[in-house]
Length: 193
Image (cartoon, rainbow, N blue to C red; front, side, top):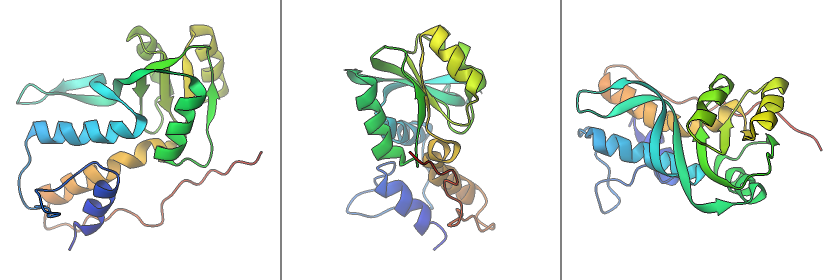
């Protein structure tokens, strides 16, 4: 079936759990609350709870804000080295570039793909750490001056966790269209020590 790959990926990542007894209902409807729960579980890949939208694009019909990026908190502040290990295990990047501003990691903003332009907004929101991809050298210099831990975990690894949910939603909205997540697209950057 069209949905098997999406459900398998989202389930193995802990984003969806099904309707019970290992069964899923891809033709059923989900509420905004259930969708928000799926986003929250995707954010758990970065260890985050207490999620808020980073850059609000609007408010849906049920009063739920939507937009780009998320802000959340860890259960307790941790050293940057520990947080980098968590990201390495959950996002599986080929490598990460980062600036350690000397702050423990607690309040984290995540912008999938390329969100370096949102750094000032992240600092205004009171975050100590920002995870995104495709950063330029000047982003790292600015982060150091701002006292912001900045992690470039790569475009693909920061964006890919949401693709299973997005693909599922598109396929559900347009059942006559075959929607398939690429099996070829992957992290293309390689790093060498």
